[in-house]
Length: 227
Image 1 (cartoon, one colour):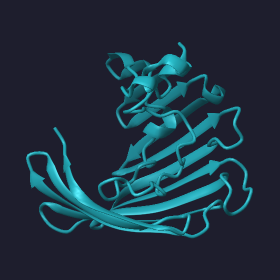
Image 2 (image 1 turned 90 degrees about the vertical axis):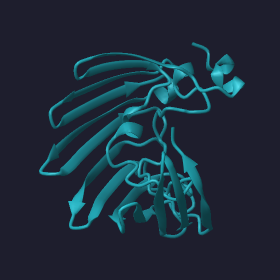
Image 3 (image 1 turned 135 degrees about the horizontal axis):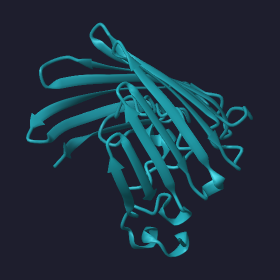
């Protein structure tokens, strides 16, 4: 496949083809990507727009599904997913930086532990990712870590990335999410808070504010429609 003339140039997302049988699924094209799909990499969904996603430990250093472009569809993306009971496995590969990634996740007593590994030609890609998450009292807590290349100092693009996030129900239709994150390449510690209120019928009122790792503050407020 030739990424230069693929769906990214038309503004339409690339296609993911898949075949599934029982707990086994094989996908090609605009694949999910093992690290992108790994439990704990998106512990919350802050505000209306994500507000920079500093709480995503692997920091998009691996293959991922693209809703507005090619993703790995132009790079011979392929993946295999398998689940059996409380065990989940996922392996993906693409020609982008010759990436090969995989994770294993296991759920026990309400807690999910996941470990991901990736081999890549890029020194800035994620090498190791880890997460653990579960309910503690009224909160759904997640801790996540990723080694996104070697530490090259503040203001660069590589190093370790840590995230602690929580979600609390504060009413029958409202929840609050918070996070704190730090990375070797952040200028400041990143943190944020949001609220999500379900209006019914797939509609929700959402808003949040985040102090980014680059030192800037972002906020949003709006309505999301899910159909």
